[in-house]
Length: 121
Length: 344
Image (cartoon, rainbow over all chains, first blue to last red; front, side, top):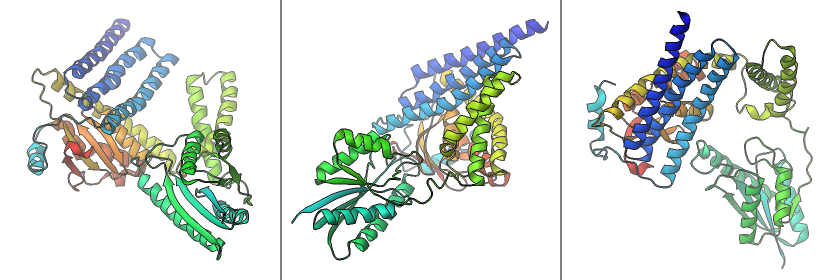
């Protein structure tokens, strides 16, 4: 009984990991520029790798290898934003202009800000 | 009339005063007129956090050194040039330093470089020997100023603080070693202690950039452990929001560039904040200048979260405690704004 449950937990976790990796891939293809792609690329590292490694940890059970997977995730979480920042910063440095929402000009900034205030997240 | 041209790289050390003194004296011995080029090499390029502080320090050091030269020169014929080098590039190793000195020497017809034996331009690493090797290699004449050093490396015998650093480094590396190894096996315990000992002795001085505090530092680790679940929750939330937007056929994204003035100290806290912001999908730190973060946001929801400053409060909680965490959000204190693309 416990074994079947564990099996399905592993399948669910791996499935979620694959799902978020898939979403991230779709995002990289659909989004317009390097900055917005960097957002979605980090999804693979956070939840994609996160769920997949959680699945691995459950599969290993309570033993030393599970500790390694947690450590692995920790290092992924440290390196991912560093890499994303490096990419976007070098893009900014080489003068890649971001695709921004049209009304982003200086004039109506404050109005727009107020408009979006009430929006749900 | 012969002119001796000297290049004196400065850094804020205990022996810098004597180095300048030696440069003036030896220069005036070699020729009757001296041109003294005082330079500070900037270890960071101009738009790294804290670079403002570094350039302020450099300016101060240069003006101090200029006074010293005037003082030592007496009535002799001395021309002083001061400048900072490397402000537009990232100086990494001794080779980079040697090369910018060489370029400067070529440009100004420098005869000789006078080195401070304690020369230490970056943050922690000592550079003298490798720098001399590189100067040999490119064939730039140099001279090491003979100075009396007060007790070598004053920081090593820093008493309690030195011990704290050693102990903390030892504890961290021993803990990590045992995490990878088997804490119940005597062999791992012994080798781990040996390795951690070596690591602590050799790296304790460079590991921590701020002094440790016996109460606050461990507390920060505990609070950081509390922060992780909160961060994970934020990541999951943001991931779902961004995924929904991406998968929706109309893809209603609204990319904006925002500027947020954060209220955390530069260095580790700011790095932690910028990394947390990047780690949550939907917000991406493009630049970090001092406390000013330039953040690209993908969807309005993520931008609102950013302006509400949840992560900033979390970081303040980790580094300064619970009381400091309760501050107004960037939006309320008018520290967040949407900027155009030309801000990059």
